[in-house]
Amino acid sequence: MMWDVIVIGSGIGGLTAGALLARDGRRVLVCESHGFPGGAAHAFSRRGFCFDSGPSFYCGLSGSPSLNPLKQVLDLLGESLATIPYDPLGHYHFPEATLPIYSNLERYRQTIAQVSPQGAQELAAFHQKLLGLYGGLQGIPAIALSSDWRLLPKLLVNYGPALLKLLPYLGLVNGSAGRIMDGTVADPWVRRLIDLECFLLSGLKAHGTIAPEVAFMLGGTGQGGGGISPGGSGAIAQTLVRGLERWGGQLRTQAHVEEILVRDRRAVGVRLTSGEVLQSQIVISNASIWDTYGQLLPPDALPPAQREQALATPAIASFMHLHLGIRAEGLEGLTGHHVVVHHAIAISPNRAILA
Image 1 (cartoon, rainbow, N blue to C red):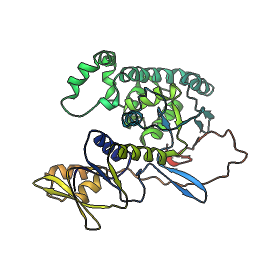
Image 2: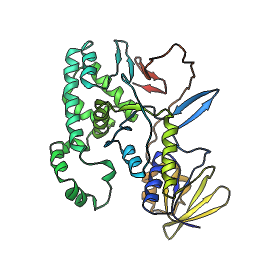
Image 3: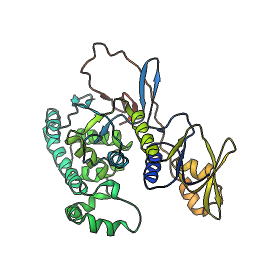
Image 4: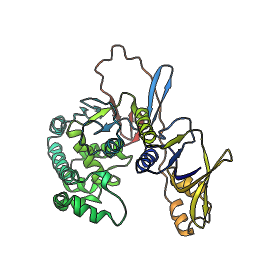
């Protein structure tokens, strides 16, 4: 069988690409090496406990309309995901104080004012800049964005008023949250707090986190959008699989792709480790950039400079995840996230963090 598209990897990105292309009428196959979908965002069970592996905090997965790109994808696919809201979202435990993390930003800043009144005022200015950017971006759904030449005409025709609203914040769209922090926050403890929140969001501190990412997080939680699916990350992956299959796409697990087949510098299919060859007009790799350019693609499939540039991308040191199951009897009302910050390291229920 000739597939229109083969997607390598069933992470959130691979499932999203495959499901949307299937909705568009393409014959899509998603190949996954492991026995379950989700990639870094999956769930697993041990001794009666169900653990999330990967993300554990979500904004905007309930209600419509939503600015959460994943929620927009699920709406397009005709799928929905049950969520449980919670507030406060958890607590930050600093040496200076323990802070409840409220969805309401004013209430959150009031708790910060108990530690640093001046810092809380500066944080309000930081939030104001980002919420202004959020206000400009919310009129342009993420699902409408693309990287081709048709984007600008489409935005002008369909989202002209939103573009005008965004104009005062265009300088922030490609900038970092750290740049905004430098212009609004001097208090060293609040700067440390912002760095921590950016790290929890993106894996990088404020100067390495793009401003729109933080703006969407603030806007989503500020509207009470924080919540979690009862099935965790695994439920999100399974919902995307349902969307893929609803529109005729297929998922194959235990299907490890060994090589992307290339002819005249065009992908023509993949070869599995079993030796099976699957033909396709398009191949999308959701594998890492190092696996894709270093192992899956033949060395001569792309111009040498392009391959070398891709492989020169620095890798971020990996995290260690320690999963502990605790019986919940007597722990009713316990908030979901507790992030403990020491001088050089922070420990949360699902990650170790340099802070």
